[in-house]
Amino acid sequence: MGKTQSKLSQDQLAELQKNTYFDKKELQAWYKGFIRDCPTGQLDKNEFSKIYKQFFPFGDSDEFAQFVFNVFDKDRNGTIDFKEFICALSVTSRGALDEKLKWAFQLYDINGDGYITYDEMLQIVQSIYKMTDQMVQLPEDEDTAEKRVDKIFSSMDKNKDAQLTFEEFVEGSKHDPTIVKALSLYDGLV
Image 1 (cartoon, rainbow, N blue to C red):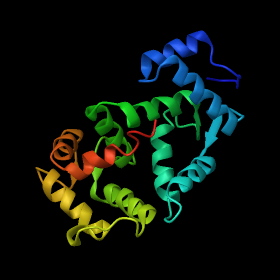
Image 2 (image 1 turned 45 degrees about the horizontal axis):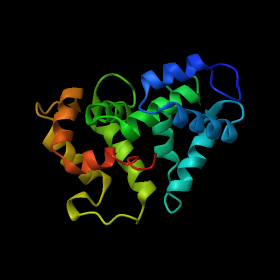
Image 3 (image 1 turned 90 degrees about the horizontal axis):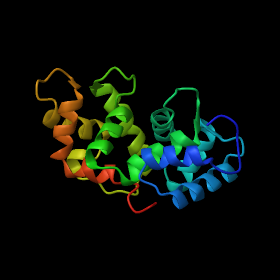
């Protein structure tokens, strides 16, 4: 979406309506807020982390925010434009379960090779634990990031090759209510 403009063009609106779950009025309101908060029309990692900090003021959300930023930043240019922002928000807040699972897989697959390794999942889960800190009481078998990842891999990694394919992740997630619940993080926020 190149240069910053005060309003979305009719073509931009039509494209976003086609590619998101937001209607025209919602898109215009989101755009207005985005440009107010990001006058350049670009959101960088620093600003993105500050936004996350508002939602998780008692924990350290910086690392997790960086991982989420990387999934939002589709063109990998180091900033998020409005189209990237609203498309990701659409999936995470209103998308079908399969869309949310695809998005989550991209989050956990840090290096983008099509597999989630134990270490990749551990990095994400550790960042979530840092972010939620003492806000969430966890069962004893999940009270550390390592225990949680061990539990996930023992149930999802069907062929025991120490990495999860997209298919293993989807199948395992559909049978783990805590993962599905985590994917609904943005439900009701927008």
